[in-house]
Image (cartoon, rainbow, N blue to C red; front, side):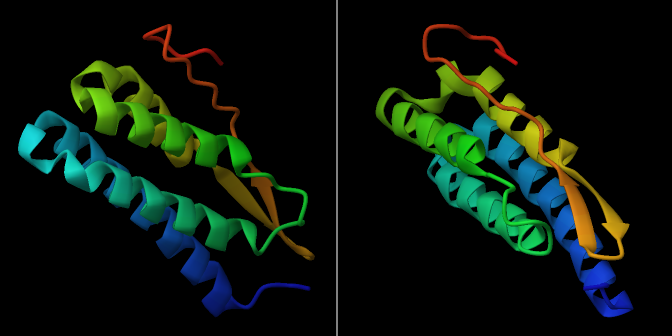
Length: 125
């Protein structure tokens, strides 16, 4: 199913919205008074990624993004987000690295791998 021009513009808007929300996540991390917003904004990014992936083949799995968001929210909420800067940056960078190209069938989606560990304060990709 070929996408309409309106759908293409919608997808581009969603991609730009991911950029804006991930910038807000990084701003929230820098301000401990806003740490409570991090989880909500990560869920917003997941929702945007889900919307984008709905236009591609159904085999596009966002489970690793979901696990990363749960990992960061769970441990960050419990121990404080100050220890999770690299993890948050990794999540944001990976979300912004999601690419798509328009095809006759819809879009071809490219989802980067994202692996996080509480034991390492670095990206494990």
